[in-house]
Picture 1 (tube, rainbow, N blue to C red):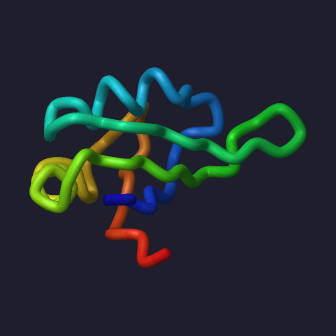
Picture 2 (spheres, helix red, strand yellow):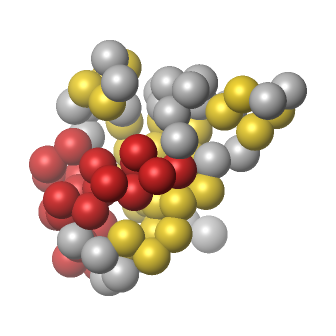
Length: 77
């Protein structure tokens, strides 16, 4: 189950996001698109299942990550 995460810090790494979202369940993959050597302020986090994705939304939506309030929703693609 993919989550679309916005307002990600430019310097955030895939490992940092993986560790953060692991608190909600098993993270299968983290993808941060890059442009010009910097992250694009959004990422896709793939959780193991729907329940882990929902838990991540409950725990972390609008929470601070590296000083920025991150927002996310289930990705529909």
